[in-house]
Every structure is written in structure tokens, then in C-alpha cells.
Amino acid sequence: MKKISLPVILIILALLLTACGNVSADSEQTTDSLKAELENSENETTGLTEAKEFSLTIPENGEPVPIIDWMKNGAFSFDFDAIITAGENVDYKSGSLSVVDENAKIVFFEEYEGKTNNLTYIKKDLAVYLYVDSGKSIHPMICFDIISTGGIATDYRKIEFSSSGTGEIAGKTLPYDEYQYSEYGGPIKFFYYDGRVVGIEYDLSYKVVMIITNPSNKVPANAFDFPKGYSMQEMVGADIYEGLMQQREEEYYD
Image (cartoon, rainbow, N blue to C red; front, top):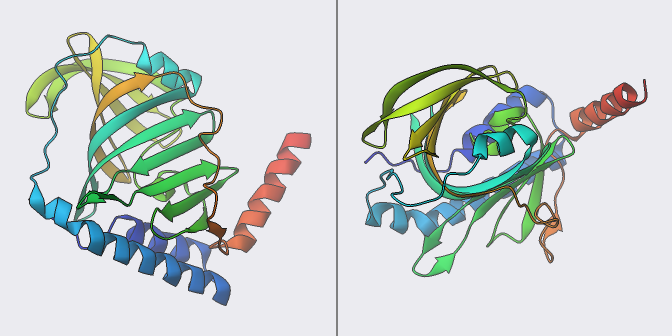
């Protein structure tokens, strides 16, 4: 199995800094701080990656639910196992996704020797906020769509059906419906097994193949609240973020 030395988030940080151009010294220090926390997290959790072979498995049981309709309506959640590819880097992740309209929460589950040390993204107000359980600090960044959310797409409200077919996922040949993903610009496939949507595949800057379980259209009201006891750090690209927020307000009131 191919293993990466650091989470995909370090690639994201590099892309964000490139996109933001000149950033303040405080922002650079914040980025260095987040890198250190993630490196420590990786050191604490690499044993799990090495201890078991990651593979995607189609769930045998479950009730058919209208998950695609929920996603198009902008209120849904599910758990996932995913293979996320960014260039030559391959990441194997289990986690959860919760979405209400533009807001989203992505949690990548990490555990080693019985200790949980999850990596969480909270997306709201044109920003993404990252933290690891052990870090006790929250790191805000400008939201550059899928680049900023660890490769996990969150906004499915504008997908439109385009075709059907069959394809390979998790070692099985299954039927799928393909939708055009106008939010990110590209197709997305929903795979069916026993009448249920069990898999999602897309290649939108990141190539993602995921198996989903426990779908729901119920998202807790406090899902996007920040954890208590964590300190908020300087935003990476704060000047650009302020400009985007001002533009958003002008468009809203025009």
C-alpha cells in the first residue's frame, strides 16, 4: 500500500500560500504552527496506517434513502471511507461529512493506541477552519472550494443528471448515475448496490473514490460550532478574505 508522510493538508497550505501571494508574517507563523501540529498528529497516527491494509468495502446492509435528493437540497450527512489522490500523493481516510447549504464539517478519523486525534475542517462564511484534537488551536484559511476541504466536495446543490452506466468501485462492477458538477466543473458518479447509493467518485482537482454509510438528512444545529477551549489563530490570507467578504456584502445588497 502506498503511504504518504504528511496529510494532504500540507499540499493545500502550499496552494493557498501561492494563491494568496504576499501574506503577513503572522500568517506565515500561523501556517508554520499548523504544519507542526499536523506533523505531530501524523507521527502519532502513522502506526494505524501501517498496522492495517486500507481497502474500500461495499456495505451489504442498509435501507435505500434519497441521499441524492438530500444532497441537492443542501442538508445531509454521511460517514465515508475514501481514497484521495492529489498528484502522486495518495491518502486513505475514514471520516464524516455534514452539510447545510454553504456550511460543511468534515472530520477525518485518526486513532492510534486507543487515542483519538481527529483532523476537522469547518467551512462557513467563505472560510475553512482547521484543527486537530491534540492541537487546541483553530487555523482559519480562505476557502478555495475543494482545495481547502481536503479533497472532499461539499456543495451538491447544482448537480444535474447527465447519464447512466456501469463501472468498477471497491472491487465490484455496479451501476451508476453520472451528474454534472457545475459548482466545481466536472462529472460525479453515484454508484448503486441493492438499490442504495453506496459509492461516490469524482476527479475535481483531487481524485476521490469513497464508500458512504449512515446517510441522513438530519444535521444537528450545533454541527458547525467551534470546539470550546481552542484558540483562534491568525487567518492565512486575511487581506484577501476581507476583500471577498466585502464583495459578498456588496453583491447581497445590490
